[in-house]
Structures are given as structure tokens and as C-alpha cells.
Image (cartoon, rainbow, N blue to C red; front, side, top):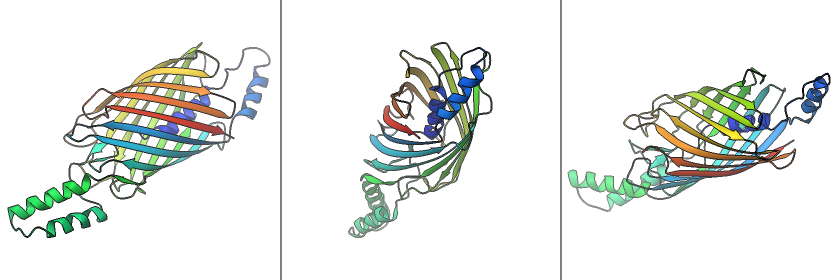
Length: 298
């Protein structure tokens, strides 16, 4: 589950359109395509990720994102994504291991209560408090996640020799409940690119993220991206293979690398179906990740 969902949605919506035919009536087909282009899209999804993330504890995260994408013009898109999260423990936040554990208020109260029940002092009391804190974090957590705002602009349309280029700006608002977010604002700037060659197409994107300060770990600004190749096996059905990765997002860990399999199916002019399955290729990555989403275009 990564920050790129809305960016991928916009890429999908722009790539399912049939290329304009060459000839004197190309302008007419382009006009018709613009009339058919959606002005509003809603995406409902479910994403699941699991793994140790370089720790000794296995963590499973289930996310239910809801995205709203608005197209004021044929070049500009604006989006909001909110999500509901369920996780079997609080040792991992936003796919990163908590290095400086500070408990949420309910968990902290439980830890203090457990520690108070032990009438020790000194090192023994400290060890008891640490054990109580670990036990509190081992409990499952669930609630509202962070809110993401995305703005993209189709800077360059695809041509015979040039790829489609779309700069993207993303801002994360720290709306997540305790133990489900870092509690900090994040921002990223990026670029997506795609180019078709008949039934084949190539895609790539990259982002630079500035992370806000958090007490959970020593956050670092990082670069992430993905690239891959796809093939339209049937009209509207586009499977693809790719790789994605990121530089370290916190001190003391390695970067992430994942292999990914995607499928986008334009079931109708108004409904798109997306599937993805990822396999972790580095210690800091989830062992596996998968998702399903439905996009409704209006």
C-alpha cells in the first residue's frame, strides 16, 4: 500500500482511451473522445500486505481505501483518498518498523496499569514497563487512516516519438488514529510517464517525498519509483509486469524492492477493474501484497 494509488488511477483512465486514427477526421474523433472522458471518478478498493519488514514479528495490514478523482479539464486532475485500516499489531506504521515506540493513549494507559501492578523498583521496574509496553503494542489496531490529496497535470500528450508525461503533487494530512500513522505531514513531487507501441506499452514513475518529524522512528526523505511493461491482450484488458522500490525511509534500515503483477480491465466505459499482486524482494519490504479495486467513471 503505497502513496501512488490516485496517480495510478489517473494513468489508467488516460491509457484506456483508444488512440486517435490518422487522417482528415482525426480532429472529430479527438472531440468525441473528449466528450466521453469522465469528469469524476470514484475508486473503492481493498489492499492486504503481510511480512516481517525486517523485524521478528509478522504484521498483516488490511486497508479499505476510497478515492475521489475530479477532472476540471482534460489535463488537470485532483484527488482525495481516505482509508480505513486494520492491523494485527502496532509494531509497523505505514509499512515501517517502529524504532522509538511511543504508545497511543489507550495503549499507554494499559501499559502503566500493568506496570503499576508490579511493585518493583529500579531496573526490574523498567524491564516490567518495557514488557508491558511491548505487550500493549502487540494488540491489534484499527481505525481511520491518513488523508491524501493529489494534483496531477498532463504536461505532454503522447505522440509518435514522445511519451505522455504527467507531474504529480501529493500531500499527506495526518488524520490517522493513534498507532495507524506517523502524526506528521508529508509531501511528495513526482512524474509519471507512459508510451504505447501498438499493443505493447511501457510505464514509469518516480517521486521524491519529504517526511515530517515523528517520534516513531528517525524519518528520512526518500525517493521511490516503479517501471514496467504491459500488453493489451484483449480490448480493454491490460496485464503488466514491473518492479518498484524506494531508498531508505528511516534510519537504520535498507530500501525496499518489490516485483509486481498488475491487471487493468475496462469492463465498460464507466467501470474499470484493477488487480495487483506484489512480492517483496528486500528485507524492509512486505513479503507479499495484493489488492483489488473498482473504479466508477462519471
